[in-house]
Length: 129
Image (cartoon, rainbow, N blue to C red; front, side, top):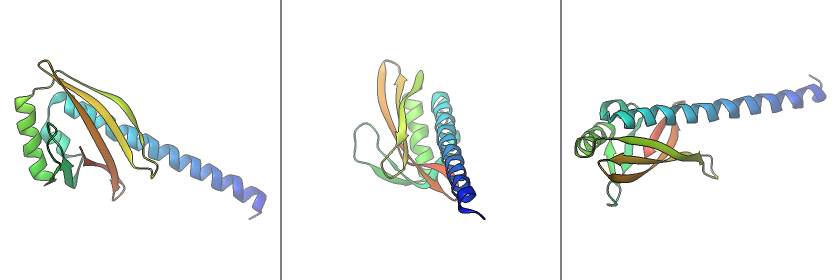
């Protein structure tokens, strides 16, 4: 293949891949947003990595299995039923790791939610929340 034709092809493929990755990141964040809005720990667990670091109410982060984290979130949603959840910022770290910052409201209380997303087996999953 002629180099003049090869370089634009590589650039086009790279741009297409980056666009698809950005779409996948936004898509998983949108899906997580809807599950948190609904207060569904079961649905949220579908987007959790096999091990996830969870920080609640300013306590030190705890590592939980996906199943344990589902119980933690179920208890949290029972104590704090969601009235509103919005994503206020999302992006990627310098290393390319996607993240999102949200605001969770429940009965006059407001919680800041920070999520780090990792790609595991071509699937975007929450690694830290």
